[in-house]
Image (cartoon, rainbow, N blue to C red; front, side):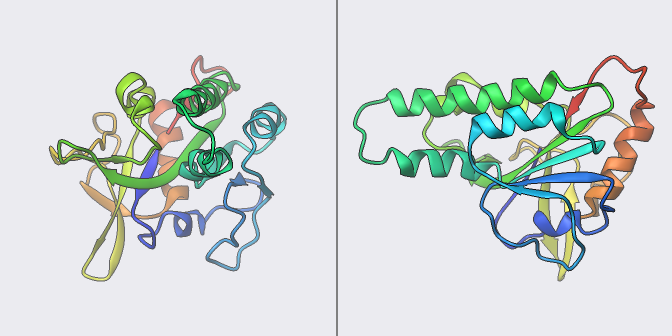
Length: 206
């Protein structure tokens, strides 16, 4: 998982992937903020995304911006009263994560989204409503959670929890608390750390 405020380098972090490295599920349909072409599917439909995941041949998959899966679903049902729509949104998003976990062990799936400040002051991945926050702690389903940071005009990923966010990474994976916002470098680091090959047992969601 990678989260952060708009304009802090989330989508730009894909800039160093080669065409054969990654497939992008572009939820909002906006152009990528760099000139390099990457295989991209524009959709915000859960069923289409989940059906496509097992067919993707690139080793890494990026869902950008995953927050808008919930936002767009909410807007489509904005005039529907009651709490069922929130239950449906939680159910659909959780099912997408579960679908990612069922992929072959040489796949890494990145969920990129916006950040939000919770009632207790913590910064976390943004959802719609409190159903997911209260009953499905999204970050708990991810091994690695990175946050975008802009400091002195430079763009970074935070790799360590500061006590007021949900950032986490495995011990020894990243030597620095702030690393360049380069998702390809992160991808290489994850694969090296876990020795990820087709013989490994577990797919990672990040």
